[in-house]
Image (cartoon, rainbow, N blue to C red; front, side, top):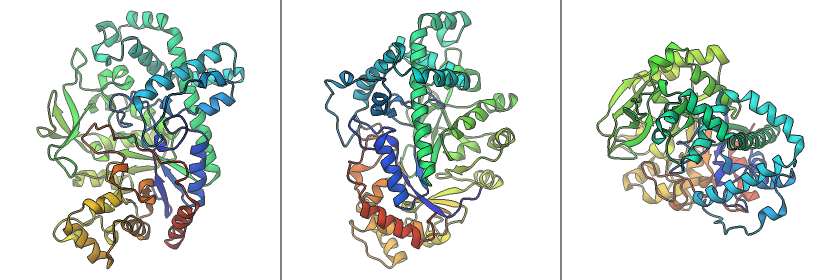
Length: 502
């Protein structure tokens, strides 16, 4: 895949400003798209858009296909007659700087229940035909997900492998009885998904009209507690009680001395190959409905993955196991044609990972915050002059510190290497934009910068600290008014000067 020389900004929609405690797919999202267009940016990169659970990580969603109800714009629902003024009485106090996911779970879920009740009473009748079409078109995943979500609510939030055996094991009689008693709840889940996809499709169309495309994530693994694992149990390593026998993670690395124990169930690649990789084909098909470019998170897991026996306290005692990524990607391309994919090839990268990436001519990734460490730093593959053309360069990602914070906390040797390489002596105040200049000036086809770096924010505004479940993870929001016209002009000037303006 070839990407025209261009640039973009990384921002998850939950980080948008707005009146109801979390970013939504309405006016503030459109304003962000307008700002990107004014800044000369071609891409808006987001993280996975699925419904989040414990820990609030978008990389641990209840479904690889569903959308996150928290992002549904309530003002749009009011305009469409699905919410009334009375529904907004007694609003809780929201934090403008951080998402309170617990509050969203209670309050927003109630608002969406009200929206569905208004729909049942005849409000927004114009949506009924589109809703029926949506249920038919998305039935391949929607039927399982809506039943899963309704059962999970009925079971008090318990994971599916803690449900009674008939439901856990998807016995036909137990599922039929559940569909009967939970029919209204199942239909409500489907309606909420309809609202999400209706709004996301409209926002994506708005962006496309302004020359902005969306880069989105496919996390290589699905969450343990997900409709995907429950409905496709035979494609994962589970025992008879639905417990995983092995789980995913990564060995000790830059982020953690004990590795990262993710806990995701691992694929039975032999079973997937036997049925023609149908699940993966549908997953990519669904992602193409959401995104213009797809970034495969932890791409190296398609060549070989870190298998950790279950249970385990850390990721140290694992082993590398080969995967069938080549056969899978061939099957996907045969079914869907050439797919625009970015390979997140960070971490422990071996020749088999590079071969898989290069066989499909996929752009990999480079992170400039990793470019200035080590003794002979001149051979570092992430230095701008060592980058490949078919590559995506980032100042940092959602898992990194902000660039301002990185400079503040960097070893003196790394600072020295940066000064030597650039012949500049930045301050904490100037470093982030110097790194942006380096990224945009590099030979990599695509340069992406987190919005925190454009805003020159410190460590307290980072999005995630890998290997932790701290209250600051995934919660950052920028404030209304921070997207100043002068920042758009500055970013546009760098974009134009480095040949990245669309």
